Length: 299
Figure 1 (cartoon, rainbow, N blue to C red):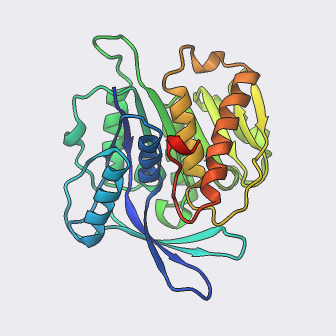
Figure 2: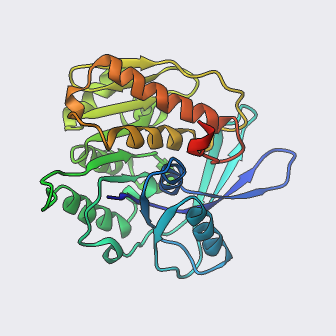
């Protein structure tokens, strides 16, 4: 069965000091779908794009990476202007809308369901996310299994609402999924002043089976209720950080959705191996320009 990704696809307008603007396909969920397609997974993306040039470009780009796209193109395609600092980090300014047609994937079974980023918070499409997450939680009628559910909040404070509203929304979704992946920046915005270990424990306490926290060039953390592992970052010459977190998420979904044992039963050595794979995929991506996630043949 396919993996279903739900979320925004947009055009990144990358601004670098002293250089002309660069236009590239982006959107965290679209990057996750693209990365899974490039690793050979059967993947589908429910999204919302315009019927303009940018929308056509996005559709062609995703399909070239083996992503089956579900969208009803209309209006203008969403954009995100990413301004790069000298260290390669990015600051974003968004112009977007989010109103996908959930009927395009209704009454389907999937091996995994990934949600995230702005699409998980922004109305009216957030209601579609909830409906499809409810559907995914029901056991498959033929196999009796439920799909792996994953969530990357990819917090954008300027878009998603007040801190109290956004934290409540994050916690409601984290309580309904198997895996939460977030950055230390996300965690510090959600739970300021707390240690990474306390933040992990908070999210696990909501009901997630596995929480992964990326920390830029520092080590990442993977944790279940019974095991925790610190993952060393791979050495890489950073071109920019666009798509790094999405690459980490891709690797987690790729490794976990066929896992023969429950996530809660993973021991520390397994977490280290899974996290190491994710760190490697992210290191390949940051050495390239933009969200150019690797193909399986490059690994």
